[in-house]
Image (cartoon, rainbow over all chains, first blue to last red; front, side):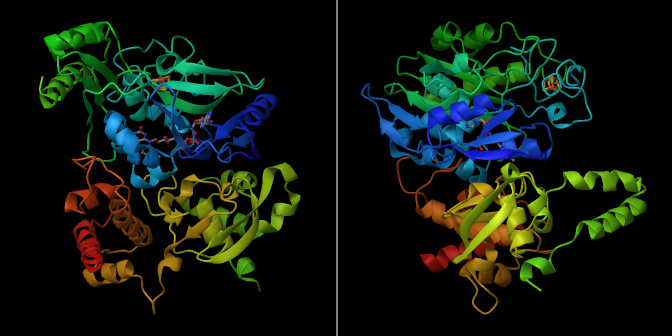
Length: 316
Length: 222
Ligand SMILES: Cc1cc2nc3c(=O)[nH]c(=O)nc-3n(C[C@H](O)[C@H](O)[C@H](O)COP(=O)(O)OP(=O)(O)OC[C@H]3O[C@@H](n4cnc5c(N)ncnc54)[C@H](O)[C@@H]3O)c2cc1C
Ligand code: SF4
């Protein structure tokens, strides 16, 4: 691990300022992704801003009837919150489908959104990887790509985003709240948080330098049957090959987002209009532009079948 | 000699050990010698480290207060093992995947390898040594012995810390991936226990005996 200075921030704007004023800085929350990557020297920050003491660890009700989740709320506490279990069960289901008890105790809401890909070549510093080392090439294209993206990727990178939580947040229309170094706040929809790789796969989000996540808001509950199905190589403790987060209303309409297939949670509000016609109709639109590799073309029919299973469970 | 000193390897010793290891693995000795300056700075050398690169932290471990000056890079796991001689907590994969380093911080189990000691100012830490000692075992420790919940024993401290918390988490109503009903109380079924223990890998495969040990303690608590 490279040496770094460590600063404990006392308020969000100060955290943002500190991060922006150091050239090679990173925020640290739970540390479960960042420290892993720092040990491998895939991340080499020279300055860390500790955001764990900002007091952003509460879940509050908003005036609009939704919830405002502080960025430091742990994955365990978020999953266990009574209001989340009752009104947003797809979020609890997605959270408990991820990682392990130990990791969820430490992992934070903001950190979970910003965890980096699990592409095996991103982790193997002996291999070319445009995301880790821009311009070096992509070992996954033409390599072992079973876990990687079937849609949304580019000729430069086909990594998937590994978060389960983010898929549920996308289907729930969650928004992130941030503060920048000037103290300006803004909200960002989950879909606008992430960028597609294009020819700059190293740029993963639309956050500005120093911009710190303070909270995530959920709009008023929308009811419906809420389901998260995660298909993986083992039944526990593995990243998704395909996952489906769905909210299905009694009349058969609803929302669908996919995990494990793209560089970000994959949802298309047009495609989900076909929900009453069944899984095939939705997927034909949602994955119409899929461009899988030989290794991962199984994900396209698997996504369809997973959604079919979800709809069956929802009783539609 | 202080307890801390006893465990310390000075840089010269480290180079010699490094050279010997390198020779036996067929790697050039210089590869190791060059690698040492990158290694986390040991307490004796902390004085030479720029102030911005180290921190002072105080926390409670097994009820005892500790204040340490640490290289910012020091993980909580390394601080426990190498600075406090609490070697019960094991280093397995060092990447949060195996669970051998499981301890509790402020009443929650975590992987001590994926957190920095410097981030734990004011925290209450409990390791396997704090759960119980040979003459005063925690019921979970006793149950692991009773049921042979191990073979080589390397993952055992992490398994025991995790097992104790697994029962606590079920009691507290924290849901897991196999919890069917999110609105009611949660029963400590075999499925629940297995799912919650999935972050603790046992390469000897003592899983069935680990489950028996946990069920035994569950029965005692009921
Ligand atoms: C063995 C293992 C298995 C796992 N399995 C799964 C799984 O199945 N599913 C899954 O979804 N996840 C899984 N994870 C990943 C885990 O969910 C993430 O590591 C965790 O959510 C990251 O949160 P953190 O708070 O620890 O983030 P950190 O490591 O602290 O930070 C991650 C990133 O977020 C940035 N960041 C953190 N907070 C803020 C903020 N407030 N503002 C701006 N930037 C911020 C950091 O700078 C860093 O770049 C697994 C991890 C491990 C180690
Ligand atoms: S898919 Fe992306 S992360 Fe994986 S090797 Fe290619 S560039 Fe790197």
